[in-house]
Amino acid sequence: MRVAFRLLSIVLVPAIVIYIVFILWASPRPSHLFYQGLETPLVIAHRGGAGLWPENTLFSFQRAAELGVDVLEMDVRASLDGVLVVVHDETVDRTTDGKGLVEELTFAELRSLDAGYNWSSEQKGYKFPYRGLGIQIPALKDVLARFPETNMAIEIKPDSEVVTRTLCDTLREARRAESVIVGSFHRRVLSNFRKICPEFATSASPREVLIFFLLNTVFLSDTYKPVIEAFQVPEYQGGLRVVTSRFVSAARRKNVDVQVWTVNLRSDISRLLHMKVGGVITDRPDRMLQELGRGGQVELIDGVSP
Image (cartoon, rainbow, N blue to C red; front, side, top):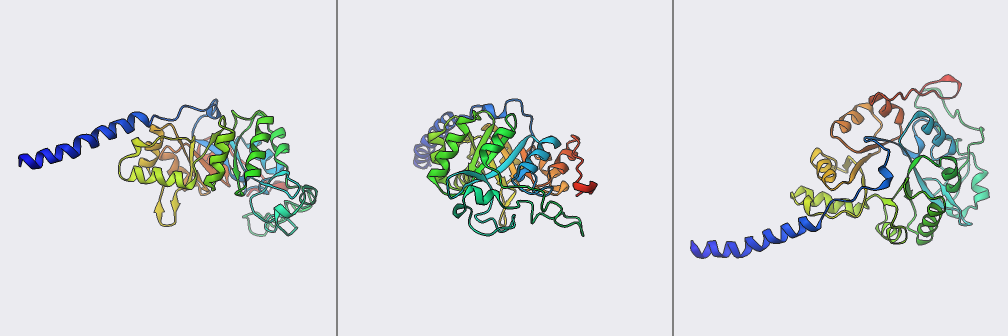
């Protein structure tokens, strides 16, 4: 018995010491100026509110800003001639009247397309109300200039060092270090962006989310040292539930926001708000604003509600 106790002490005591050292090292993330003046939960308009208006356009961003959202979410790619444009897909086929890869079209060619061409309302029989209205794919510089005081969440879509560097230069030129958070599904992209633009807030890569999720699962989340300002995650990944009350609480202890995408049903929004998430990324920001008692009444063109 004495030998067993001694062996247990030899193993347990160093483990406890190491655990304490990790906790002391893994301090919470310092507060970033991105959140200054914002109150959670954040209403984050996914692509400007893709369920309400043609996505990723000046039109949608303007309407979302007028509606009173906290953050405009958008995606960036580069045109053939190196202009950063706000568009989600690799191709223009789904959202415009054109066809082809974004990276194989010049900015002038992209601007000639009708970015409202394929948008259709959820309401039966009310199709394609924004065709022919001159809605275009915008350059990121134009979006930044149009909304100088509005917080934005920008996702870098391609795995490209050139796009990453250009985005860093563009955001610095616009002096947006206090109002933009940058994310990407590509770990290398985020790593490079943090090196060259360390003053900007960033969200977690899928790998960083996984590490925190696993640590939290085995009750070791306090040993996690964040280099991020937000986990932008789905509630479920496949059959696995990512966002739980414990996940949110553990992230909050690290001063990291949990922003859940893409949530459009009011019942789901309500349930997540009860979990105290830091924000909801939604195609229907009107519904979240209504849930929060912040207005949110919307009309499409011709006075038809979505």
